[in-house]
Image (cartoon, rainbow, N blue to C red):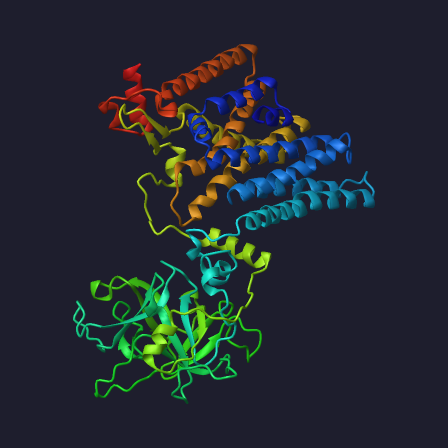
Length: 607
């Protein structure tokens, strides 16, 4: 594909062969391909999208709306969809193709030789192939994905309760038969919607807050309330009507609605959820949340909460199991029940802190949903404890629609972050360009043979220089053309601009966004951008030979230098073979350094 792309850009067979050779001997691409990692597939579809669009664009001049024209146009959209389906990074190349197609479409609109209907047909064809088909295929990929993977798995907890309940087994097995509407007297578990740093449930236990914290601040010495990242009997709460003493559901049930005042009774200790003007243990600007213990001192109970259904459709919506996302607003202080995310010390069993937050802003850490739910029927505590373990009988179907599951899955993939902020082999985008980093993929347990993701420094450095050289030449030509000095014929200039837009633009779009990303980055994230630089390198070399070398002698000398340069790239690729293929044992001295500068010295001494 590299060979074909350079040809479609109207450069020579020698330049195309050079691009193909560089792709073949680049050690990082070899390693990533041999280990079947996603970047290889991503690069394949990136190049497929670019090649398909170029073939479509070139056929536009001679045979528009022909079968061949439609084939390459449709294949462009399919390749873009596949690239995004492999990794979200594929959207960078999709944006590149869309941008170039938009410029070409704009030029097409200004073509006076085409009728209005002809232009309209061109625009509709491009919209269908480059917008509608990629979206349709991307939805189709996930429709098949969700249709085939319909069972619960080991990492379901990162998804919402509604998503988990739509899967066979797991939470669906637990929640099957639950009542839909939460009523006064309902027994519920409350999961925090935010799910960070860990998915967790509102929890309490008999232990109290310490009288004095480590920093010298005092507490209320009330019963601890936390968020616990495991299912537990102490996660159960009873929704109580403040005007009544009973803890059972009436017949018929009285549903809880948006705006109702409720009390939350801890199922195992029967103490009420409470907050007051006492600083939280780890968040001193927020209020402590506890279960109230009457110590006969001047600290009255403040245990009334107003229910706020965040995703309500009307002002009198009922509180629904799994589906409703709710906030609890403290009546006395207007504080909102919130997960702070901080881990309590050993006295809190390393569970997560829950606070009362007076901020008027909205954040998912303030939002909760009912995950497990049953109608309470036992007023006595002993019977109620047994009831908390018993299954319910009413069957409610709450399967999510495909679009709801698709949207949630996309959002989780976009926003979910690893808790670790560093990794042994993580790196910054600046380190990629200088190849001042690597990744150790494999080490033989006995012979010390190993595989590293390590690039060919001759190719990487030259590709970066080619990008700089192209940019400088482009602006130089552009400045001179502004002064009506045309160094290049129009056809050559248009080919030069298109090549730069694709290769330099592809490099920039696949590289620069990483400077804005707050996530752990690795060297392999640079490989899609590198492939566009590799395509540009022989193009710049041919341009120098054809247009900057004035005499035949200069061309001959330059050609000899290019041959020598390709030979050195092949030589370095071969030198790095032990770290690319892992088929040669390395001595302890050779293991001490993995940066390309040190590895270069080691391998030179070895060979």
